[in-house]
Figure (cartoon, one colour):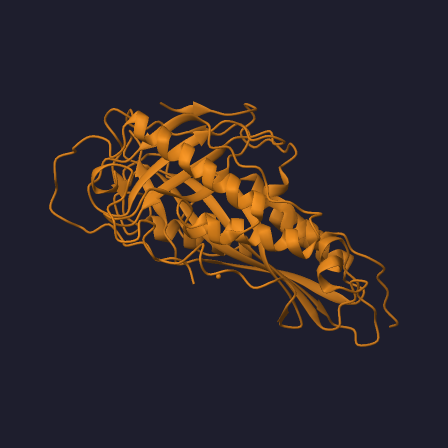
Length: 380
């Protein structure tokens, strides 16, 4: 079933949550300005095996609900303690890194900035049916407390001994329609990152989108519909560059992270693809005699009045969801369904000003300590 969200305006310019624009906002609070003149956890790529009969969904409704409840309990416990090591049983990959980063920012700002609320209560589930690993499931959440839009949750299990864990969350844009998939009773086929049955492979889609964030004029053959996240990144970078122009410059770079992407097939032969991108916003002082200050969270993290001696960088990890049409589609346009950006690192003159990340939330160890996973037979 396809799910319609929020406003019917496809490219609505309404306010976006702090989830998607907090990184540049951290730098946009420019202070006085004058011029005198975490390795990602590896998930195996689904193997190209001989075709097998679809055996039905890898999780039934009751098991999916139990998994989500366990994930919610794990996140609640970790949030209460602000301890990323408590996430590892039920949170992995990008989700673990993003939540760990939010804890570090909360600590670095003495609690002024808290982790964004998550909702594991769901409107609809999209369960994979493929027998290969990683096994994937997705769900559209109810709207979290304090937010105005739901999340697309991606769950994965990396092997037979691993429980399903939260792999990513993505805030969906206003007005998007989550593409229709086969019913939970049947299950959706898992699409590998190099699957060529789409207008572009999932790997190519994520890489091309990262190129577009860094360079709106990037030369490639893919067509992306306009989306609020990319538009705000463009406009805020331009605004930041203008604000510091008397004594410096601001630039934005982006690249795909080698983690995922994960994808499930839609009824039309396309796919919902979720990938991860790292963006870096750099403010560089170019006038030796000038004074360049940044404000907001960066002033707090720098531990001074926000004075930039050489350069500061805001590094963010962005989880992005796409609808990618099938290769034979008349309309080859790729739609960005949503994005969530979390500040993962802050650097001043190449030195980190945020506490180092913990290892336990993103390591590759099985959560079951050598025992079979508890989500059902063969981690299903």
